[in-house]
Structure formats: structure tokens, C-alpha cells
Image 1 (tube, rainbow, N blue to C red):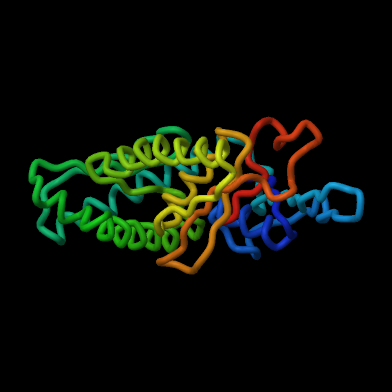
Image 2: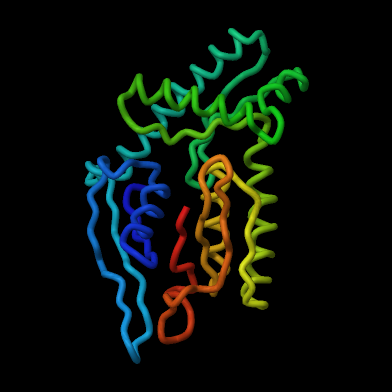
Length: 239
């Protein structure tokens, strides 16, 4: 995704959500303020809305796909080199799924694969950062590849989506906000995307990494006149 539009109680809040969605810094994007936050007596408050586009986003989708494929191929090579250094037999293959370029790692040694994942995926997160850093230095571009080991991330993503959508429906019914456990940025993005499909609720984040967590709540004054967010989607997805 090369352009996003996000809303929030303030311009800063909306911009933070958009930047994390794109995985970019403010220096790497062009920002357009679509709407300033509006409040006033006898008028329902309206959220700030920003549109954020990665610089150079005029490139067509085919070029974007080629860039992603190049990143996937290079990341797979780097992962296989790391496996050789660690003495863990395995193969790495790039695979596009649901718009995400994964580098899937498979091996015959279950202990070795478990070592790569680590407790609660902590080792996998470290592997992810090493691979992304290497790709970014080699290609001089932001790396959007996600490293996965024996579908650990995909299974977790599926389970997480099912669970948080259940929580979102409960929040929508009861009106009581619920805080989820601390998560990494990949899982937080999964939560924001999953909750956005429920409608009538929104997500926000609180705390600092590694204790940063998502809060699911009813919209905070950003609903439209029909009583819900436009298109049935969340109005704020702040990370």
C-alpha cells in the first residue's frame, strides 16, 4: 500500500496511524491534511483526517509488485545464508499472500525451526529485523518483507483475527473498552485491520514498545450522522 487516509482526534494522532500503516517515517512521505478536527457547541465533533502518500508513489502497480518480488528474492537468499551459518537445515521461499510478501522458511528439523521461532516468536522477530535491515541496506529502499517460519505468523494471524473480532463485537455490544495484551507492530497492524472490518468500534494504541498494546473501544465522537463510521469501518486506528 503506497497511500493511506486515516483519521484521529488530532492531526498528530491520524498521522501516527498512517505512518505506522505504511511503515515509513515522516521524511519519507507527503502529507495532506484533508480535515482539521472540528468541535463546537451544538455540533458533533469530527475527527482530523490526513492522506499520506509515500514519496514516488506515482509509480504504477506493476513496478511496485516488481520491487516487492525483488525484496522477497533477496530476503530469501539472506535467510538461507543465515540458516547455513547457524547450521540449521532449511529452505526459504518468497510467497505473496493477502497482499503481504512472506519469506517462508521450512525445514526437516523441528527443533531447529522451533529455535528460529523462539518463545512467543521473539527469535523470529529478531530474525525479521536482521533480514529487513540487510535488504534495506542492499536495495536502499524500505523493506516490506515478512519472514515466517513454518507458517507460525500466518497461523497466529488467523487466530488473532478470530479472537479480536470477537472482542470487538463484545465491545460494540457492551460499550466497555477492552485492552489487549502487548504486541509487536506486525500483530498490532493485524488487530487494527481485523477490527476495522467489524464496524461500530475503533482501535487505539497506548504505551511504549515492548509494552505497547491496542485498545478496542466505541468511536470517540467520530461517527457520521447515520450513527457509525463511513462504510462501516473504524474511524481511528492509532498504533
